[in-house]
Image (tube, rainbow, N blue to C red; front, side):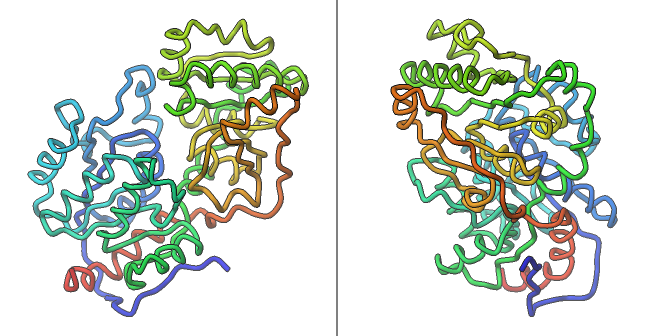
Length: 375
């Protein structure tokens, strides 16, 4: 049963908190917005420190306004992202803050957590305890290290807490909050219906995202993946809608693969906003992705999902709406001209009821003094 864990160190005296929020990518910020909005609603002070890990002018255009974030709360790294330099930059900025919040598993998350540790400020890790157990992935190494140095491990599910307990991370640092992406999906998924109708032409479609290096940087695998997508489109008689990622576009151009010609019924569009992405997911017959966040969103929206990856850290979704297709299996489908079977959606979203942002802020209010004394 879903619940929020309470700790014995609870302190009922509420005070205004000063919170440093570290992010470097759009997916991190999307999941941080529910926490930011709750901090605002409860009168706490915060500042967003953007590491500049990811920046693309086209994809960032209007992004901050779409999430209703004011520039006055943002402090940007003035230089190109270099891991060690970002730690030093953050160390100079964090003096006087009560807690450092990071979300997810990027290099910005690790840099932010280390900077907080170096200046002796408690760290709150949002989306703690998720695991792929594939330590070849930088993200897996990042999340494991951050979980071990955090004073607040904000876990999306019961299973995430159980993993931390098995890894001997003290229970007093682990809290079940739900996942903030549920809050964001509830808030934004009703937007952009006209956009979906315009893009799809009112027809059934498959929504595709594809951008990870292990999938798109290999010319042989990328070629096979394009062939599989063409097979899926033909046999399902369904259009594929693909907001092309800049990385994938670059690699397709490099390998001289014309995806529009190779796949008979695909509509390649420019990168879309977060709310447009949610709308396209919500309207899709099937989602095909290599993204971690899209797996969660598909689960929340109750959409069947095929994930093209060797493994997934969103293991809770596999019994509900998600099926893992390993890149090494693509050849098998092409040889037999078989469609990967889409999963039947069953069960409910395991990530909570859409109150994760509220849960996180209230846990900080109730427990920060106790953590500070213990840190």
